[in-house]
Length: 253
Image (cartoon, rainbow, N blue to C red; front, side):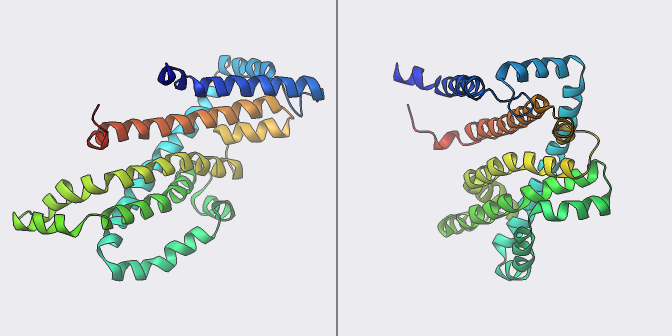
């Protein structure tokens, strides 16, 4: 009974939040352009869904996120692996990696758009950069956490370098790698929106700017909720991957 009830806690929390939102609107009696009611946002959602604009811009942002996440994770995993295996390489690249994180992506986004144009390339690059560091760090931590005794065991059976990689290092570091992917998946949404807010003619970031300029606050709420939905969807996909590939970590029932 307790387990069954816990499954509904998330939905109950959302419903309570919507009720509290409606109460705040009614009690404060704020104008709609400052704080629209849940009904106003729902109506605006249906309108933008019916004219196709919401799906069009959501699809554009999702494409940026997907490509940025892909290139960011691939590059971070490869570089992170070599950093984990070479202390010298880590010392050489560490100043650049730390410096890249010291500067907020918002500060360099206009420069990247100036260099790579206002098209999808700059948005994907910004998204990849914001995903890169957490995945890189988790890759380094995960690979270095492999117990040395397991390397000795693999060498004792004359395992090749590729066998050690795919049979030992990847499975042993996978929990940490997927943890980094979970963080990167949510950050990728932020990266795409940063690029779109700086300069874009498509995407949910574009809808945010249009809603802001036109005092269409309901549209702003719709775009924000779509971004939350995308982040939750990506987070859920990574969680499913963890359940699929980390079954050996699950306690026996």
